[in-house]
Amino acid sequence: METAPVRLVPWSEADLALLRRINTPDMRRYVGGPETAAQVEARHRRYLALPGGRMYRIELPDGTPAGSVAYWSRQWHDTPVYESGWNVLPEYQGRGVATAAVLAVVAAARADGRHRFLHAFPSVANEGSNAVCRRAGFTLLGATDFEYPPGRWMRSNDWRRDLGAP
Image 1 (cartoon, one colour):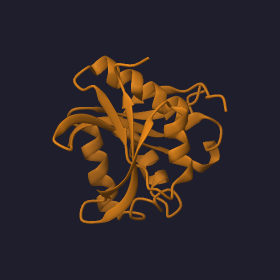
Image 2 (cartoon, rainbow, N blue to C red):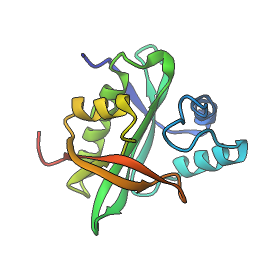
Image 3 (cartoon, one colour):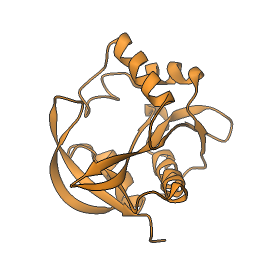
């Protein structure tokens, strides 16, 4: 599958509407389900001030918002790494949008330069996100128990991209 042309735009106040569009049972089925309005607004505030990383709106070439993608710093097995996550609206799934956005985030994290590795932790059941990891050059390290959302454990795949490699 070819990747679609996308542009990453830093998250802004105006992106609360996009976050509300992402907050559906279908879009959030692998990560604990939809959030309340107050939880969505709190998430939006966290995205605006994301420490150790960057949150982006994914835009198509015509400026249409297609989803979100981010990277941020975290500790994983006592090592500082980046973590990445993304959401692509259903009408743009299956077109290479997520893969293009994740490849752009790989480049952004590489340019940030604080950590060697970027991880992603999609649910083992999330075939689409696991396929994005494969297409974006991540290496599957295996399944792991992962806490997300906070207080809830899920079975995830641990995918890693070496930012020092091409």
